[in-house]
Image (cartoon, rainbow, N blue to C red):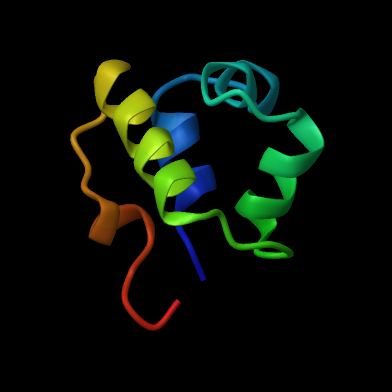
Length: 68
């Protein structure tokens, strides 16, 4: 399972806010967060970039652990 929700909350962002920042709908982002859908590599990198820009030090491997 990914850790998007945990890191998003640490960044003090709502699903709507982060979805807008990565050019996705809240629904699509919600599916990524709950694991119903997997983001593409480019979208996953955008998520990590936004989290970093909002003060959360994390990497792609932190947010999307191997085997998740």
